[in-house]
Length: 380
View (cartoon, rainbow, N blue to C red):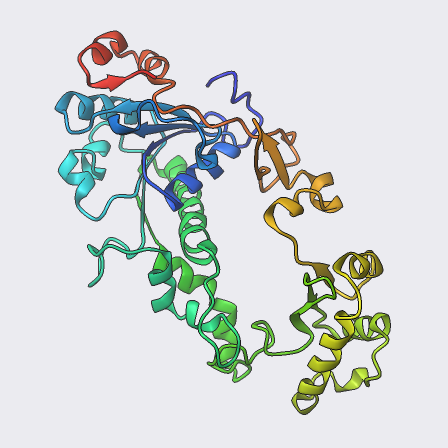
C-alpha cells in the first residue's frame, strides 16, 4: 500500500487493476479508490504524455503497458496474480483475444474478481454492437419516461445509464463477489451491463405501474412533473425553484408560505391541477430565486433553488459537508459514502498516464528498467 492510501478507507489493502476505458468503468474504479482500494490503471501507450486532468482517475496509480506485445500481457498477468480485482470495459471477446480474459487471469490467481463493464452485456443480440448511454436507457424505458407531457424525452445527462445503471452496479457486484471470494477462495465474473442496471433502477416505477398507480406516458405522474406540487417553476429573474411537496403536510406548508388562495385538501384532485399549476407559476414569478431561497430556507415545504454546477459548491449545506470540493483547482465531488471508522479526507489528484509505471512494476518484483527500456512499459 502506498502512503497516499493510509488505511483511511474500508477497502485499504485491496488491489484493483483497471484496464483503461472511458466512463462507467473508470468511475466505478474511482469509487473503489475513494474507499481506500489501491487502483492501478493500465493505460495504452498512446496515453503517455497526456496531462492529468480526468477526475475519474483521481486517487489511482497509473502505468502504461503495450498489451499488443506478449511481454506486456505476461506483465499484466503477473500484476493480476497479486491483485484482488480486475476491471475491463472491452466489447465481448476482446479481453480473451488479448490474452487477459478471466481464464487466463484465474490460471495465475483463482481468487480474483473479474469485473466486466459494458452497455449491452456479455450476451444478447446487441452484445457486440457499439452504443452509448442514450441508447441503453432508451430500450429499457427509462428515457421514454422522462420529459414533459406531449414533448420529447429529456436526456438525464449520462447519470441514469453510464453511472447509475453501469458504475453503481459494477461496484456493488465487485464488493459482493469479494465477500464470496473471501469465503470460498474462488473469484468470478461480474457482468455489469448498463441495460440491466438501468432496468433495475426502475423497480419502484414498475411497482407503481403494476399496481395501476403509474400511467405509461411521460409527464403524467407524481415523480415526472405530471403533478403541480412536484415540478420546477421560473422566478422573476429567470432562474428556477424545484418543488417537491409530495406529502400533505409539506404541501400545506408550501401553500401557506406562498400565500396561495387554494384548499390544501385539493392536492390529490387532478381536476384542480391546471389551476394550481398556474397559481404556483404566478406566485413564483413574483420574486427572485434568492428571495424565494431565503423564504423557504429551513422550512418543510420541500422547495430548493435550481443551481448550476459551480453555484452548487457555494450552497451552505453542500459546502459544510464537503459534497463538492476543489482539488488542484478542479471542482469535483467529495467522497461518498462516508464511514464512521475512517475520517473524511479530500480526494487525491489524478495521476499523469504512466506516472507510477516503475513503482508498480518494482513492487511486483518485475524488472521495471528492462520492461521500460524494451518499450513494453512506459514511465511518464
